[in-house]
Amino acid sequence: MIMSGKRIILLAAVLLMAVQTLGAQGRSSSGKGFDSDAALIDAVQLLEGGRLKEASGKFVFLTLQDPTQDAAWYYLGMCHLYQKNIRAAQKAFLKASELDPGNFWYRDRLAIAYSMGGEEELTLATYEQMLKDFPKKTEVYYNLANLYIRQGKLDKALEAMNQIETVFGRNDQVTAVKYDILLRQNKPAEALKVLQEYNAEEASERVLAILGDHEMAEYRDSSALAYYTEALALDPSYPPALLGKAEVFRSRRNYPAYFKTLTDFFGNEDATADDKSRYLSALLKHSDGRFIQNFRPRLDSLIDLGLSLHPADSSLLSTAGMYYFGTERPERAVEVFRTARDAHPESVSAAVTYIQVLGTRNDWEGVIAESEEAMKRFPEETAFLELQNAGYYNTKQFRKVIDNCERIIARFPDDTSRTLPSLCTIGDMCNYLKDVRGCYKAYERALKINPDYSPVLNNYAYYLAESGRQLKKALAMSRKTIEKEPDNPTLLDTYGWILHLMGKDAEAKPYFKHAMLYGGKESAVILDHYAEVLDALGEYDLAKMYRLQAKEKKKEE
Image 1: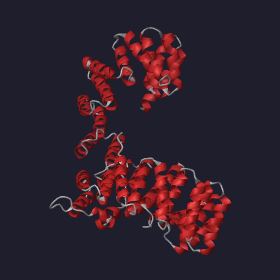
Image 2: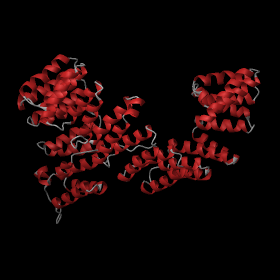
Image 3: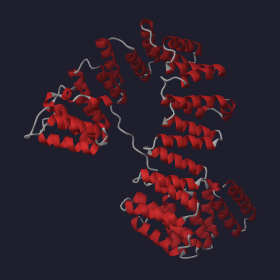
Image 4: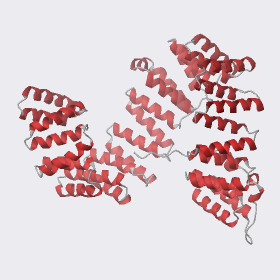
């Protein structure tokens, strides 16, 4: 399935920054009658409006008109960053930084671009130099500490936090980071001391909640509850303290208090939808069916409460949908996933998920119609052609499956990851249509692209064998597949079945036995084939047993 890439998220404030704050060097006029300030403002407005290609073109033009205009280089870097062209963004930010080394934002975005490009040494060097040039910018210390932590340089990370304390004084954020670093260094006693010392001097719901978590990890639920309660006395809506308190009640099986506290959390506007979704997902994942069944009305209420505050949040909607499926309310689940699709018409993922949900309900007409509608909104996404093919296949509209596969091949003729599966599907569909010539033609087209493509080799061999044609050719093709994937039960079945059709049942039996060890018992077809081989070998009782298993498997299917 095609996944949509993560969007690059940057502070909106950066884009809204006044042009004059980006350095006087950006203000120049090149050429008679050309107003570079006005042109820069126009280009920034295009960038803010999401018209990235147009904005990029204008910024490039500005840098050509005046290569010393640092603001144009900076915004050009922002355009590249939004378009995920990380290398180009690095070059543009570096140029802006060289033109105005005293501009913090230029250097900060350069460090971010280096980090996004996986160039940790350059990121580190940039931040370390920024620390010397901007010693009063606390975010540089935190960024450095995070980078040191990622690199496992925990002593240096701790040193950066100590520098903040020295320059700016102690605060709850520094305390929390120091606690985390010390735990990573396997120094729980020192970590706890950092929290306790800060708590003795300052009242902080954040530090109190962390103290509560620490106590819970040490199975001291009474002291944990005391810390959470103290944190909530400072801020009754502080989400980590609410969740911590709820967990104390759950560990004690005090479910009335547990759900009351969770109700406060799910109804809390300060708690994010992601926090609620993550907690609910973890709860459902680690709870047994009896817990979910016993407390289903209360869980329903929590979900309703969360969705009333976050009606369009995709993560919470997805969690709710999966919950309704898990509690055997598929119609309600479909409704929730439809809501997610409608709330996010720009999301490929929401559209794909909704169509997949319809497929789980065997609503193939719905799959076909929704896929068609999605293709109008996302004409470049072949995922919807593939989803629609599932609908056409299950409604036996095999010609339409072939048409969609040909569309994929025509659009991506050089992309073998798309053309090979499409050609294999065309061959399979032609076989269903009794179009032997079309079937073999599609397979031959695929094998010209990749002579070792297992799905085509397997299917081609199987259909040749079933038609009683060219059994030696079929066996040679099938042998290639099991040499590549010796534990694949489907491929083993094909090879064993061809041997059976050639009258070589004694040779076929070991391949079927091997298939049974690697999932063959999950297929009624493989079980039936094995029973046929055993019958041919005179092992009638064993054959009867596998035939009965095949019959039961058909009922399940």
